[in-house]
Image 1 (tube, protein in one colour):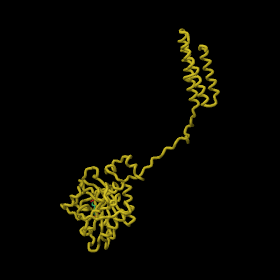
Image 2 (cartoon, rainbow, N blue to C red):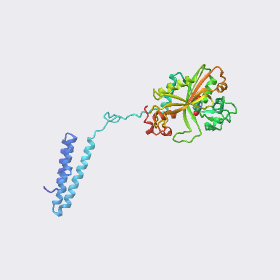
Image 3 (spheres, rainbow, N blue to C red):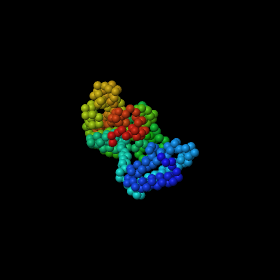
Image 4 (tube, rainbow, N blue to C red):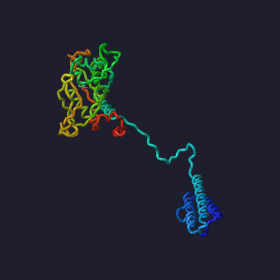
Length: 351
Ligand code: DAH
């Protein structure tokens, strides 16, 4: 090979420009670039090798020519690439880009369960109504047959509020955050005559610390039916129809005797475990039964408190925890997950 000199630098640059100008595609242009700049067998690589075989006194100069050529070709190649890159006109849309998927939200699992409960009971003729979360102790306790000092008030640790509420609260009644949706039974009966069929979904509050199974605020769904000749069989049939729609068509209902001041008789509502059908498994803690709430026949004292004739009317009522249903429904182990709103949790629910 002839040793490079100043004029061969210029002539190689000119040759590179000419070949680049003649290339018909980016691919051809790339091949031209590789012939001049490639690591092996290119003009520049040959010049670099020539340094090694040149007489010592020429090495420096040849090295300078090789570098000049390399830089000149690199900068021309960059210019060529910049000019060849397709430029989208301002404001145009590149229809070949992948679409951006819109984030679609969905309901909170507790809302899903609450809606399902409402749907089931409204199909059975119950109207859904809501009551105030800030209550007074007369509606929450006294009228439900729990006078002051009645030990049953201890069943629910109550959060009392400092300021009184206006409206229909008796003057001396303390204000509180309702401990159960049962308070709305009273409000509704005060405002309506029988027959009555309502459900009251909503939030209730208790002085409980947040742990695996407790929360100071949680949801309940109350039920109340009042009419003439209603019996415990109507209550059981209603809850059975609910349980079969909510959990499994073969579920059975068991009433376990209990005590609530506002019902007589009172019962805990147990459902046969729909996972093991009563045989005993981890979900029912080997008992075959799962408790979901309390219920009973409305106590005559409650009818008296709202001015109904207890000789004429009978009624039944229940209270079910919404979280409790959601925990069973989705097998959630920690109630706190419902309140932390971690998307990794929330996104696991169906819609
Ligand atoms: N209020 C009760 C509670 O919060 C639940 C309950 C039990 C409601 C029996 C009722 C009932 O209406 O009849 O634990």
